[in-house]
Length: 420
Ligand code: SF4
Image 1 (tube, protein in one colour):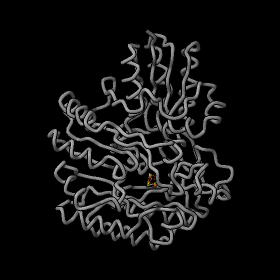
Image 2 (cartoon, rainbow, N blue to C red; image 1 turned 120 degrees about the vertical axis):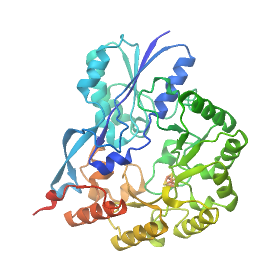
Image 3 (cartoon, protein in one colour; image 1 turned 180 degrees about the vertical axis):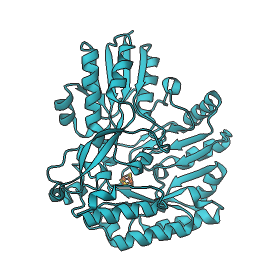
Image 4 (cartoon, protein in one colour; image 1 turned 90 degrees about the vertical axis):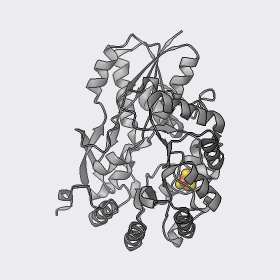
């Protein structure tokens, strides 16, 4: 038996808009690996540096100033750490018996620097431990990850653990909901998305066993809200899953915030969703036809409108429908964006304005590469509007972002920075 210590690093947060965006960021992959290592009989510990209270005004700690917009603008904005600082981590590490192995995961590529800080902190406390770095960042940028960390890099999912269910027994944050996985990956090829690069083939879970697992978690933790953030479940096992929830009388509230592909919405699916008690979802609105075609979407606004009609016919309240559309491209049409926000608000739904994370290796990164010149992975954080190259554009996007959220943010992208 060996001791394996898992660490979930904190994340970078530019402002309260990005803080809210980190909703439902449970460390599902780590919780699956914990399940696996426990099954193998190893001693497992978990240090979670993340703060899940994303809707409360928590005391974010100052991280550093980072460039806002393209580098030639010379604009900088304060950024923060959401989660625990390295000093806290060091104290937590001191409380541990030395582990043989320490596994660290980094999901968003723009959070990699904090994962490296975690690794450096662990190395000083446990110089003998084997360090292993995994997650989307290590999968997409193994050389970058290896050079910066000197850790062992694991790309992709671990076959033995990929379809295990997350083990929440070591998860200490308040459990208001539980995150579950149904289908990982997506075979579409939207030009800004890395999902098709992360998963060579879609990973599908055993639907019956999954519903049994949710039933057990419901009883064990008293949780009735189950959240799925997989990229495209409507393309795969959603109907089977809903049928199983109905047959097994799960009687929970289900939410699908990863995105229900609108052209897959049928009357039959909507009926199943209603009966299985689906309360909320992300239903992509996408952009207008020409822009949508440019980013290679296989579905568009017309499918969204038809899906909305179907959901309305089936008696859905749209107040927890997040209707997403990507922004932050160099050629955004702000008038279109404003009218999309109004259209969604008029439906009584949520205008989910979604700034793109431009990631090297995607067609969209290439299309913006001149503007992104000189940016590190960390500086490609979507909340830094990395491809916008005038202060006016950033200001307009900030205003639209806030408008989409009912102007509830006080000073997103602090307006002082736009002063001449
Ligand atoms: S449909 Fe969604 S998950 Fe699939 S490639 Fe497009 S953006 Fe990515």
